[in-house]
Amino acid sequence: MTFVVTEACISCKYTDCVDVCPVDAFREGPNFLVIDPNECIDCAVCVPECPVAAIYAEEDVPSDQRDFTLLNAELARQWKPITRTKPALPDADAWSKVHDKLGALKR
Image (cartoon, rainbow, N blue to C red; front, side, top):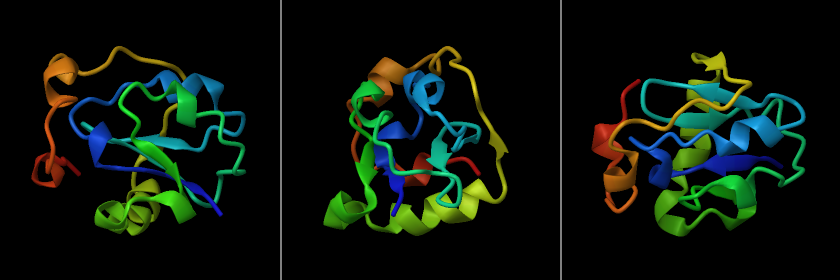
């Protein structure tokens, strides 16, 4: 099992979760983070750190967000690891209130 970053992270990219990950399972894209399912050890320490509640255990991903399980796996193979907290994106607070933002994902 793994944890999955979902739509709420798009265009926010808060990185509070990154510092607590003991195995550096996060990967960074232009405006989104993903979790590499091959690295995740299912520890759950990242979940409470996410200020927009974007991280779920794989079996708890909401039904309308299940495509993000495969998307995390796909993008984790393409993106580089992120191991330290960085500032959130400039408009993160505004984007945190937006829903249905998959179209804004930059690969």
